[in-house]
Image 1 (spheres, helix red, strand yellow):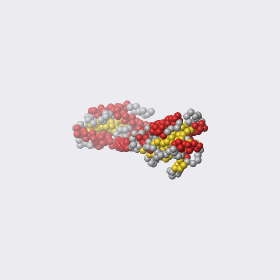
Image 2 (cartoon, rainbow, N blue to C red; image 1 turned 90 degrees about the vertical axis):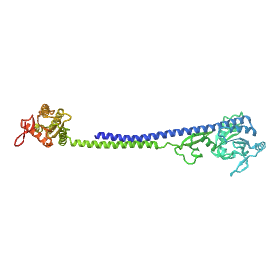
Image 3 (spheres, helix red, strand yellow; image 1 turned 45 degrees about the vertical axis):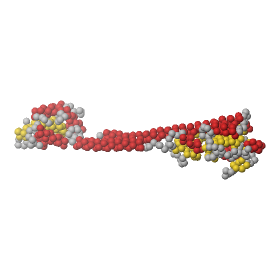
Image 4 (tube, rainbow, N blue to C red; image 1 turned 120 degrees about the vertical axis):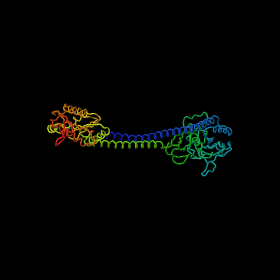
Length: 492
């Protein structure tokens, strides 16, 4: 019973632990699927935004090649090219920057009917000072209309001048950080150097000598953010970052978000996407609760079953002989009373056999109590084989046994008693040196007189058994109430 109890308890603990692990697994899978989906969504939005920006940068490079091939452009020519650049992608404005040596400044100003000026702190303008080279904004066009910014020398502005040099030195498109734009708002400028047509530009020095100006493009941050948000399938929290600095999108730190890069020219932005529709913990928690509840119910059932089984075991032990496993005297007396009551109801008779081993004390004295106990167990086995399932077989103590035979007459009881005595006589003890033993059997019949109780029947069977011993042992005697002496009832 104890082994079954611990096996059941282990099953309960495994069920509870299994349900918790299953809940954790389901939750982890939901989280993994969510993060994968969120990452794929962010990567797709970043790729589409990057593609739009790359299209604009590519068009800007094409425009630079056109400027290189055509030489000086008029305002009308630039407007035609500039408006085509704003037709697709996320480019918000484009401009032409001329390279003007100081020696040609006055002639350039007269030819373009403008004055090269520098921007001063506070947003004002002043006539440009003495410099070796000027990079005035010659023509500019924006998606929301013309911008009056002609003549501003971008080479004099520290936040732009270094990127102009880099674009000249590398010959590739270069992006500024987020800065105030000439066309209004905040965003980035892309500069693409324009070299003199046919001039060698293999080295940095050659590119510096061949530079004739720049094609510039402007990307507003809000337009880039709108392109990214428009590429997302559902409502999400979105940020655009440059490094760890947020430049657009919802404020604050987006925890547990997906991050995808957006490459624009030589700069990498970060698109941060957090889907608010995160997987809930309700289903995994419900799975864990149901599993634990089932485990608790199973544990309660196992406890009740174990308790009942233990009670039954205690009840069996209370009515069972510990050595042979036969019923003990207490259980024997209960069963005898029950069978006698049934005999009275059914108007039938039964028999009680009292069996006592002959000279059993010699076995204990000669071979020791372990040998005697072993022989008692063997005799119990002999009696089991010689009785029916409906019979009551008990060990009353020591070497004394009893058999209650329901629905039995005198003749049948005598035959059974003789068979039992013969079986005991023929049994060969397993312990070496122990001689076979015999038994004296007394028989008493009950049921013919309803006034006789169980104690009287036991006394009558005992009287018959002692009569068998007095007759020389190894025999059967039946109690006869008609043959009495002064001291006891005689048996025949």
